[in-house]
Image (cartoon, rainbow, N blue to C red; front, side, top):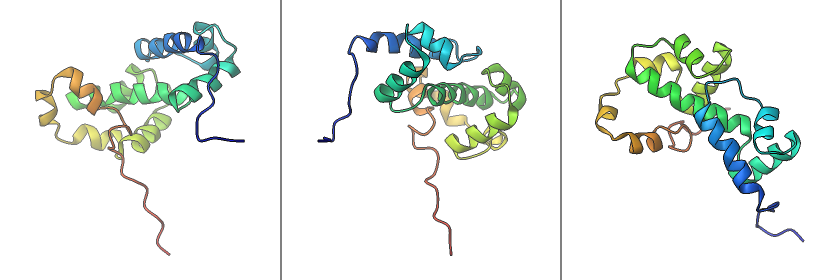
Length: 149
């Protein structure tokens, strides 16, 4: 019988998963992949990916890209960094993939985001701005519209 509750694995995995998540938060600009993160959590890559998704509701790659887009947004708000420079500084190797993911999460292209006015953000304390700057979770990206027939 299936209940509405999510199936959880070993509760001892949680500190290990947090260790890998913290590594992604710290080393977002480094080349990180699931096998390397799994080693941080002392798990196989498959087990790590399944457990991470079960605990955090997204894949490790999705979490890492969300962190990278957050940092890119901060760089682009300053206005002294090009889109390409921001892409490289946050650890993305493909400008096309970076732009597509940025647009998907934020709801506008990196160039449009960079060109927009961000005057109100400067007055917000950093601890609050981080929460507001999280793509998707902050509700920035508009809901996809249904295709008109």
